[in-house]
Length: 89
Image (cartoon, rainbow, N blue to C red; front, side):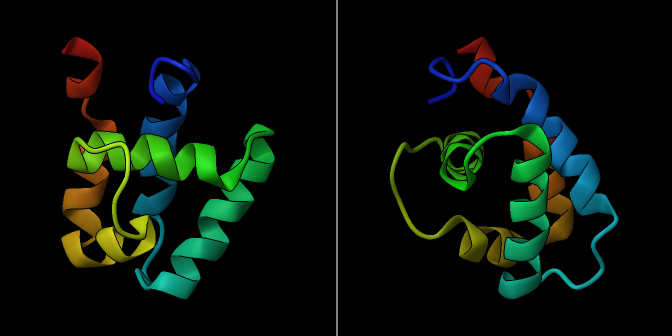
């Protein structure tokens, strides 16, 4: 997914910056924030979620990313979204 959608390299750190302003880091609120973000970028929710999954977990498929965001917490989620590790492998 990361190579299929090269804009993710720019979008995921931008998503991290958006999430830095989110105080209510819960499933429903995250979903609303991320849907708005995807609309602004002109992409689909699944593209962002699949890219985030690859970056945060190293897996192409897995559990709900909103649940992963909630479980990891705000700081770890943001730090991983800003990392460029996945593009260096």
